[in-house]
Amino acid sequence: MANRPLSPHLQIWKWGPHMLVSILHRVTGDGLAIVGLAVLLWWLGAMAGGAESYATFADVMGSPVGMVVLVGLSWAFFTHMMSGLRHFVLDIGAGYELDTNKTWSVLSPIIAILLTAAFWAVILLR
Image 1 (spheres, rainbow, N blue to C red):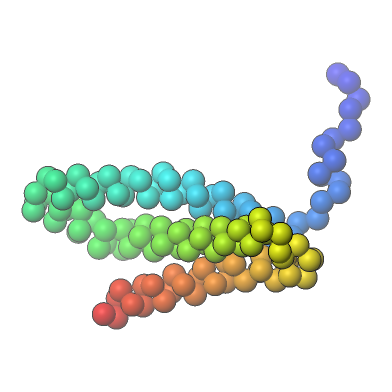
Image 2: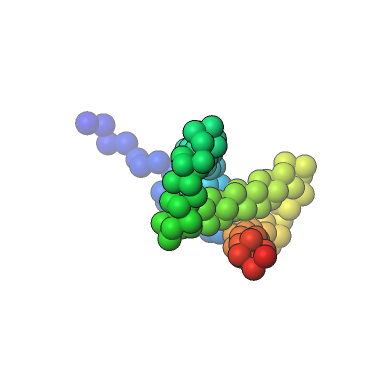
């Protein structure tokens, strides 16, 4: 086996909030695509299946496990959205200053949590 060095990123890069936001963006996108699509298809199938089928869907989604799934999907949506907005600003050439990039990297998940809480507060306190 050749005596080759390890990939340079293992020695050079330090963990930072921008890396967390990037990883969260990918994970939440995958989660929305897989879990969100499954819930959407089940919901559409339940509506097409009639009242009994929809009642089963509503019971499962109204259970504690279903609520965890729905809150998780909404958190994933808002996290992905905030990260996407951050990347949009970066794509137009702004926000590359280290302090600005770090600030928005920290604020993106915090704002997403606040938006998720506000979203569910509106739904549950209605």
